[in-house]
Image 1 (cartoon, rainbow, N blue to C red):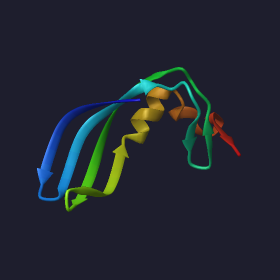
Image 2: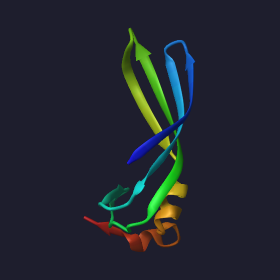
Image 3: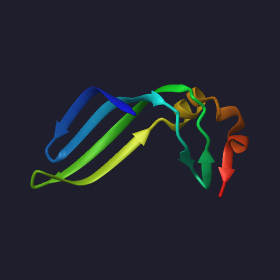
Image 4: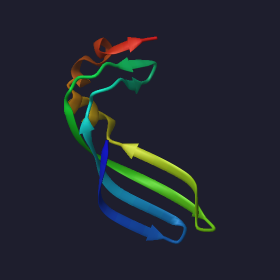
Length: 87
């Protein structure tokens, strides 16, 4: 997985990063209550990361990937239920 940074915004102790998640789906992907087997498809999806700092250290980190874009690029969005193997 590669993270291509597009824009960084800083407001006090809050850092927001606009980026793209890029890579090839060559391993199992946890999805809800199951696993999506590797599809071999490439993905390049928008994402937003939010860092909350305290005293110069990361106190909280939240990542907001565009799940529908990722699932569509992996080729499983139309048949998501069939793509998930439940444990």
